[in-house]
Image (tube, rainbow, N blue to C red; front, top):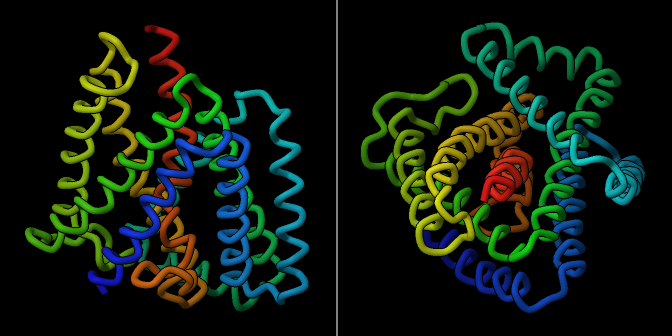
Length: 278
């Protein structure tokens, strides 16, 4: 599994970086939209949508993405509020023995209600993430900022994986994600703080406000875990381990962008505040 992950990443990362720096920004936004649509397809499958309904769901989501480009940037404050509410929900599910059973019961006993709720959540997860990436790319040195966001998310994921393998003795939440450990999360946080500090000091245009980037990086390392756990809940309710199998060793598209969907709106707001101060 690890070898497959490394092989897949070694192919996709150079392609992604090349696209980011060589292609026009609207092409990059288009590629992100394709990724979002693929994630939306997997989301619809998790909810049990038949193919025709899933296609309609994706058409509506795509139309909503184009419409959302006209919205005020205040939409990202609402997106961040959603993720903070999601963090509260995860905490409730963590301490409640019956929480997941209630959600599973809703999905089986009230499938229409669950599908409507799940479809709405899919929009709240995916559309603001795409719009945030688009806005980040519109910044001066937008490619650098997008790559920085991905590096921070990748660092959190990879560091948490290896720290958990080496020192993970205390489970983060057996009910929500049995594979995650407190030590793994802490390892990810420390690695992301270090990465943010180095990028702020030597690469990104934050001037004397590199410490602000470190603080933002620490926040992202935590909120990325929320994005991961939130989609883990959706998968557990749906009774599947991975959202798909399109990426060897990595599962589906949603399995790779779950942390990113939560981190992107926070990163956009954070860099806007930092750049306004610079």
